[in-house]
Image 1 (cartoon, rainbow, N blue to C red):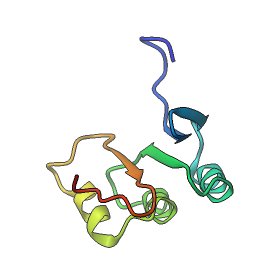
Image 2: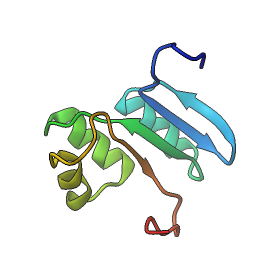
Image 3: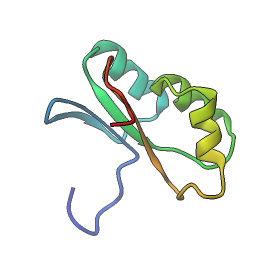
Length: 91
């Protein structure tokens, strides 16, 4: 993506290879289901909307992660990603 260009809304990758970008929630879910070893991030809304709840489900976020996104201290357009199975997010 060129500097100064549009900001991607989502991205999925395997290893160091990007396999998809700028997907909506349903398409991102399809990519993750078809590629079990893929990881993804998405820019999510800061309001509790159907889109946020759908993305949270797709990315495997629990209610505490969603609550964290909705707190005033969270940055606008905060990026959240699904970690590969077995990877600890606290590292």
